[in-house]
Length: 110
Image (cartoon, rainbow, N blue to C red; front, side, top):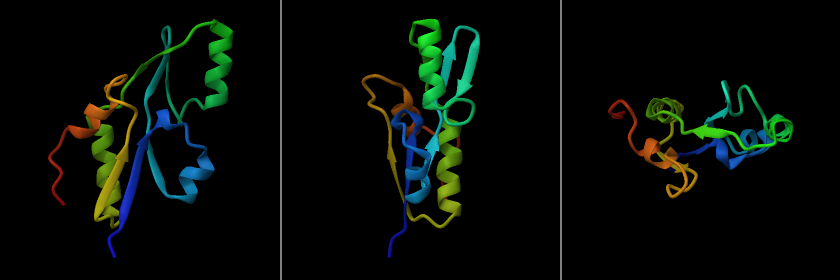
């Protein structure tokens, strides 16, 4: 039977319990409020994000994960025994995340 890994980006805002229950790996975007940068799902959760939006009365800017971030997630999945990967990203119409997921910084050949 084929083992399929699921990878998404943190824009999916999956609750931790969902990601853990279904073994979904999350690649984090960067969230910026002025000079402060946060790695989604690592340095900041959705509750804190909305607290900061209320505090500053404005939306943050964001940055897509690097191609290397996706490379590492793909490598981890293959090393854990995945035969295939399904990567679900935020729309390419509003973010560079999808393009970054398609161009990992290293050749993937397992």
